[in-house]
Length: 192
Image (cartoon, rainbow, N blue to C red):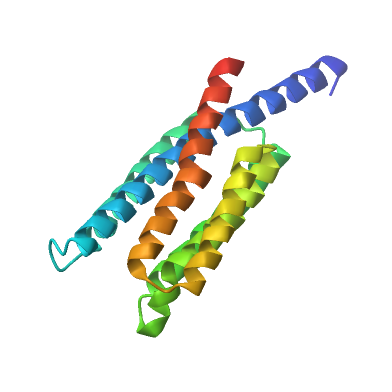
């Protein structure tokens, strides 16, 4: 590899890292809004006793979000550079760990009495993802979102009330995913 090739490789790696940040902004606010809408809808259905199956918004929006994410990520992989940066590799592994943990919690905590700690536990997982990704992307709003989710999870563990938990998780995704996701998008648009 000559000097010119080395410089081109470095430039491509820098470009790839910048692109990762922009793409990650979409998934933060996309999933943030899905969870926010599901939690608020669930709260309203439960609070006003509109119908018995109050968790219907989750049952509809989460699978739709999964399908949309699979579609968008498949499209992105076609456009993806062959250069893997430290940040992109680390984010990939952290995201897999987050997704597997979230999946296990969502399916295993619905049995027995542990469901009462479901939303605070989800917020703990959110906080870990936000803290790690915020550190890897060097983006403080994600880290602040992690701190807010940890605080809200602690409150939820102290007061096991489903309606309160729905308000807490709505607040947590607003602070941890929606606002930072839009902020990432805005920051990237100013960079272009």
